[in-house]
Length: 114
Image (cartoon, rainbow, N blue to C red; front, side, top):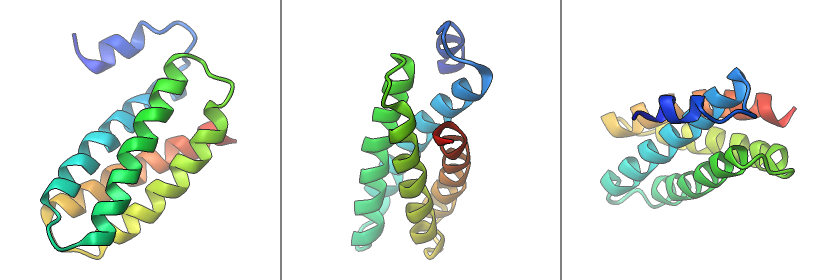
């Protein structure tokens, strides 16, 4: 079963929440990959690891319908935007892909925060 199939089974999530949850998991994966490849780029690695932790936590909060999901969504969006800015400064393919994924995640998290 794919992530999309699993997320579609969570009854309390609307379409926007499902998209955000999937984007958070995608951001987690992209950031873990980027951090692992980012030798010599301390700030990029630190931010990617922070995003991976916060985005995965936010996805779990959404899945369990936590009252704190909106607050965490705002933090996740801010962090994704900061990390995307850092990744965009590097020419590596993994950084560019990570930045693209992070921009999408930031947008959907920002929607969940408002």
